[in-house]
Length: 239
Image (cartoon, rainbow, N blue to C red; front, side):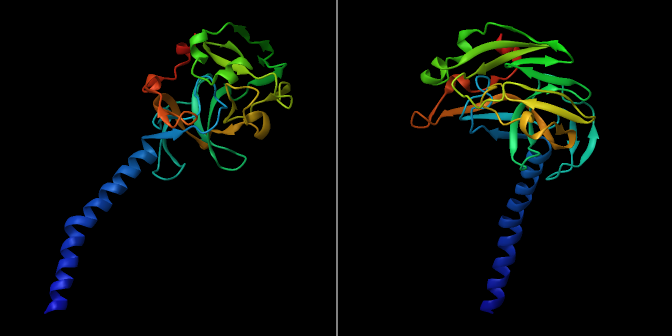
């Protein structure tokens, strides 16, 4: 009798408590896998646009719809555009990275003394609004150079750190293969990007990063940076 009662209670608990929670968990994780996600940014490779401690919103429906928990495409309605900030799996080791799309399929990409050249045409650079870099540590601001890179139909902030002697300031020219995209970090002298592992295959792209959801300052007792909460990553914000 006691065994039967215990079994009944376990079955009841499973049906009424555990199973609904498991179903809810599967649904929520499926949504995160296919529709929207967020990405923690532990490094400074996208400074000053994205800084360490930012957590960015990733729109996984920006370009296509994938099978949950995979990179298999169910449907595709768009492709990344030059200047988009995207999340993708690195061809080097599979790590999820956040970089900016610089080269589209068929483009020829070249870098000379940190000046970007696309299809034989040098990109223009103008001064950057100082407010864009004020949230970087003071020491990093002082040793860095900032500018606005005027990509065709898109402009955004970039920075260079002259003290880094090993930086890859000269590169190419290389032609981007079909169905591939050339990625670079906005922090040109401190970014592990397509200059090192080549252009990224379209299927590796997870989605488009559009906003900072929230941000914490790891160098200041993990305090929140409330001024960065829900901040758009649209390059127009950096002009």
